[in-house]
Length: 169
Image (cartoon, rainbow, N blue to C red; front, side, top):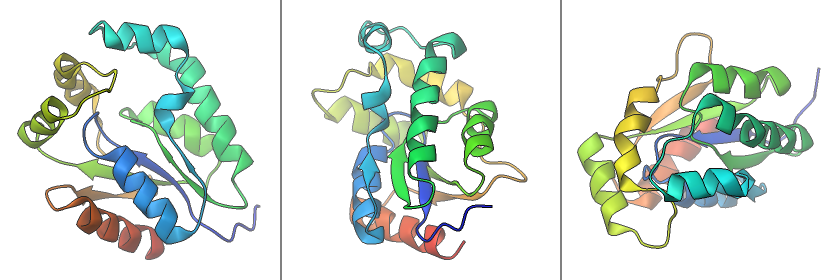
């Protein structure tokens, strides 16, 4: 069994929930490395999402593999990585490689998140895909190490809630 000293966290949720912002703040608070999950997508995935087409499980396979590799590489030193991790099967894959990973679900209403997506610029994720993400979202369930954190406050408030959830686990 690994004797990790710092938390290993996957900040999860639908696009527009604040994974990047909260993930960066959380990593800073914890003093651990941060990785942006979007950076692990192969170019065909980005092109598909930019065109407004949802990814399927086959599209996500290489992306999840790379995120798993990052988690394994940070298993002892800790880290924060963003990953939508919408389905239990995706989270099970990540947790099977690194059993002490903590899933932090940034939870908000479809209306709030749609407003955020429509306000942001320069991101490849099409706002039209939000409905498919909510349809795919399987909330954290029994046996999963993690917590849901509401995102209706400021990013700093959400990050503080996230930090409290991670450090109290």
